Image 1 (cartoon, rainbow, N blue to C red):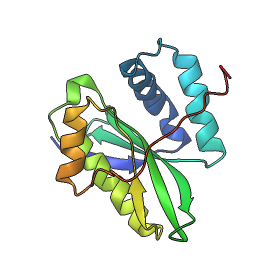
Image 2 (image 1 turned 90 degrees about the vertical axis):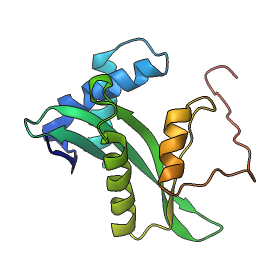
Image 3 (image 1 turned 45 degrees about the horizontal axis):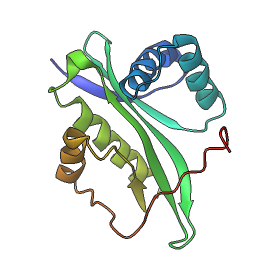
Length: 152
């Protein structure tokens, strides 16, 4: 069965929103489809991200990847932040993640970006294996700092 990655626009909002809600659940957030749908709709309406959706031949949504534009001041080039990658549980092991990662790479190249950057949990060994198999290199020269403005 063929699987393809397509750029998601408002016509695929509900498919992406359902996957996005499951993605948030994977990271411990309570299910809230209305919030997930509103968040994705906002990103689409404002053209603030690029979202690719993996679909099977029947149009069933299998996974998504979301990229946000950013820039490297040091390199003076565009970079894409690969913020979200998710494959539906029932679609795992079918190459969906690899397909989406390659769609992200192709999109970054097409937009003249210098590269892609991403973060993953230190215990997400499956994702780390995928990223490294695609040529991503773990950065050991920088620390990530976070300021949570909701609690400060």
